[in-house]
Length: 427
Image (tube, rainbow, N blue to C red; front, top):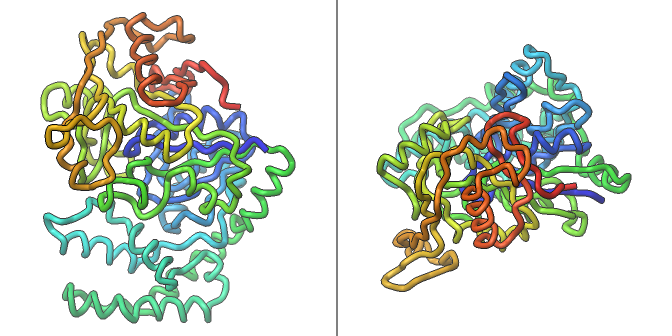
């Protein structure tokens, strides 16, 4: 049962799309198990660049079945916009499967998300404003709309009515907004029913049967470990579980079926949105990382905050996910620095701390303790094996591997699909 989980080991945007796509040619199913269109993956195929937000990256791999699992929240308008865009570029999207238990992002979820962030002002979380959090809140409050509800108008109407009973009170009395009409929402959602129907399936059954038949299934997380609702830098997190355990609940596959867990690490660190970030740089080095690395959010369009590699975070990701391997991306971005600092520990109130503090307050006040490694100036984008890398680049990778607690099995040396060094096979 070759089931692999592929997830971000930092704050997201580590290059999961490229890693998933590279594995996509060897796997039978690629499954998104959490998040929504607040995630963004850039995949470069030849001279073509694809920006995916909701769809699994495996949709670009012929022969692979892409699956949107029950743990994902789906905005139908975004879904069909992405599908239409790919179809226009000659990509076959007909094999896509969507869980009937996945929750729908409704228009009122988007409205609530946007007005709440504005209301919070300086205390805002930094959400994408796409309705993700409110949709997960509805799910937990048991007033959510699932894909399967679109095929029973009576149930759909009852659920929309129940959800808006409270939300309209909040919108009108707290935010001074106009109430949302129930009939209008129901009509808008029902308009997607026929279009969605060819894709809707019992994906839990499909995936478990595939594993029983020794098919290769890859589970793809949407955000990074430090954005996990339980294990991230709460409250500056997403509303779901991108950590490895989320693959089990978000796809309906038992933990005993997971054979390998791969964490994606950038050779430095980035973050989008608010929240603590110990190694963040506010100088010319930070600007250079942003410029050379093209650090702009695929989904948000916001500049990413940039900093040096944080080994404390990497060790934490190894622990909470049970990582067996790392895929190190964007090593080429560091070419040209004479020396490269790496955060090996934190200083908190005069104490050296080598593990991620559980206290939000401590993490907020953590100052990075750096060790400096020699850099390199040689172009590494044409490297095909580990031995092709300059000696200092090799030493940098070995140091990160030792500090992080899991083997580095692949290295990204450029943005292209083929600009990757494979050290150990993931399959």
